[in-house]
Image (cartoon, rainbow, N blue to C red):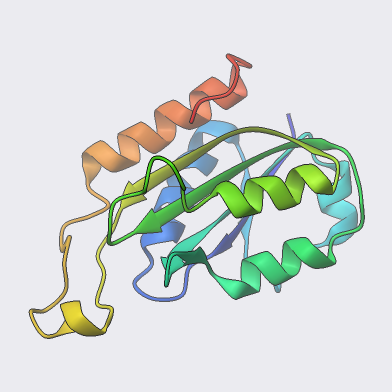
Length: 156
């Protein structure tokens, strides 16, 4: 299965660590939105899209990239890292999932975990979640990727 993960990891490398953990399981190539090749994405069996969360939204480089994608088909998944917990009734990943579905993608699930965050108020205390993503978070990311690889259905 050919898999590509498009990852915007700009602050502390948290999201890239999660992407790399998933990529190990999926045999995937990890690229930034700026490095992504549209022909390669169209040829992939599964495409992942992930970023850190900034002001309750995924990074604009990633969302702008997805907005610019031509309509297509295929399987996709979304993932995020955030200093604050995901809100169950309004997950950080929902807007990107909806955007991908409007583009014709079948979104097989989403994953999120906590991560080191030095957003302004947290910078005063040296940041929060200093040891995240930790081994447990990365193991959960790999388990999520295994479900995708094995076709065991959506895992949110």
